[in-house]
Image (cartoon, rainbow, N blue to C red; front, top):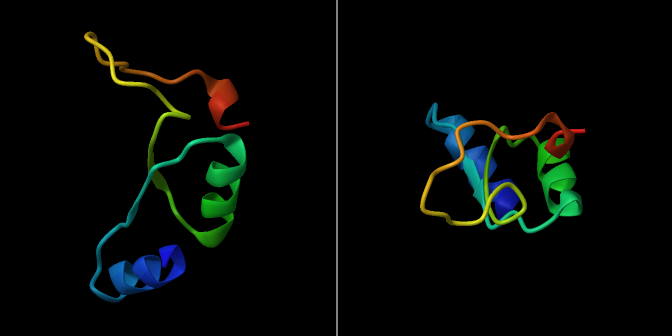
Length: 60
């Protein structure tokens, strides 16, 4: 499903957002697939004051 959505987004000139990223393995897998936009608890949990910058360690 994720690969198909990425392909369709590319065909129409859009960028696909990978939602539900729960762990580093999820993020790594999706990055290898070609995703560049991510959302999920692995990056940040909902909070009263939004996060404006993530620590570099998330991407390593």
